Length: 319
Length: 242
Image (cartoon, rainbow over the protein chains, first blue to last red):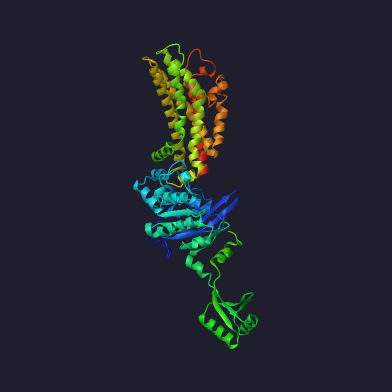
C-alpha cells in the first residue's frame, strides 16, 4: 500500500497542515561548500509563496532541486505528498516552471513555441489559445520569438508554464530585467492566478517590495539557510512602530519623560516613545503639555519591511 | 519518445537543415545527368553512383552529420531549452535519445534524397533499365549505418560544448584529412569520419587502401564505436542534467 498521504488528508500528526510542497533537510553542496543548507520549505495549497533572498543566497539552486533539475546532496523534497526522487515524472506533470530566464526557441513563433511544450505535455490543442489569452500574447503569437521584447518572452514563458494546467507554478525571478510597466503587468497576472486557476505559486525574488505585494507567505533565505518562514502578516507585524513626538524643546522634554519613567529615545529629529498602548501615548502627551511644551506633531513611525529584511539577511543596503 | 520526436520535428521544420540537405543530392543528380560515363544505363548507374558517393562520403556526409548535430543542440543551448525540456515530464535519457534519433533520421533522409536524385538524373539522361537496386540500396544503407558512430560522437560534442562553432570545427578538422586517411588500410576503418565513405563504396577487386577492408570487420568497428560514443554521451548528459 502507498503510505504517502494525499493532499487534503490529515497527516496524522495533530495540527499539521498537509503541505503541498515540503522539503526536509534540503542541502546542496557544490565543491565542498553548502550553497543550500538544511532548508525546510513549507508551501500550502493556494499560497503565493514569496521566496526571498539576496542574489547568490541559494534561491535558484533550491528551485532547481524542487524541479529535479539538480540532485540534493542530502534531504528530501515532497510535492503533492509524494517523494520527488521517486515520482519525478508524475510530479512534473502537474508543475509549471520558469527558471532563471525564459526558455524559448527564437526561430519559432510564439505559438509554435507553445506547441513544442504542448506536444511534450500531450495537452489538448485548445490550451494554447487559452494560455496565450491569459498572458495577452494573442496578437504577437505568430511572430518569431527572437523579435520579442524581454517582457513578451517572460510572458511566453509563463504561458508555457501554464499550458499543462499545473497545480504548482514555480516562477524564479519572473520580473527580472523588466521595465516598470512590464513588472506591473506580470504582478497583476500572478496575483490573479490563484483565484482564477486554483494554482499554488512559488515565486522567488531578491526584491522584498515585489514579493510584499503578491505573496501570502514568505520564506527568506540567506547564505543557503532559510532564516524566516511565515505568513506575510507575521512579517509585517515585526515592523510595529514607535511614536515620534515633535516638540518645542526636545532635549528638556526627553529628560522629563525619562525622569517620569517612560522609555523615551532622543535622536537628531526629536524623540520617540514605544507605540504599543494608546493610553500611554495620551499620558505622555498630557505630561508634556502640563510641562508647557508645545507639541507640534504626534505620528506613528514604522520601521520599513525592507529594514527588517535587511536585518535578517545581514546585507547592508544592496541586495 | 514519440512526444519528444514530434517536438523535435517542429523545431527542425523552420531551420536551415532544408538548405543543406539538397547539396549532395544535387551533385548526384548532375553527375548522373551530365557527367561523362563509360556506359549509359547498366554499369553506368554504379559508375555515376561511385562518382557522387565519393564526393558525398568523403566530404559532405561527415560534415553534414556534424552540422546537423550542432544545429539540433543549438536550439537548446541558445536560450535555456535543455532546462525547459528537463523540467517537463520527460526522461532525461529520452531527451538525449530523441536528439540522436532526429539526427539519424536526417541522415537517412539525406541518403534517400541522394539515391532519388541519382535516379532522377539518370532517367533524365535516358538511362533506362538495369538499375542495380540491391547494390545501390545496400551502399546507401551502409553509408547511413556508418554515420551512426560519427553522429553519436558529434552529438556528444555538440551537447558538451555550448558553443555552436566548437563541434563544427571538430567535424571539419577531422573530415578534411579523410582523403589521406582512406589510403591507410590499418587506420581508416577506425576513423569515424572515414567510415561513411568506406561503407558506401562497393567492395571490389581493384579497391585500394582501406577499401579492401572486408565489410564484416568494418561494421564490427562501426557497431562497437557507436555503442561506445552513445554510452559516453548519454552518461555525460545524465550526469550534467541532474
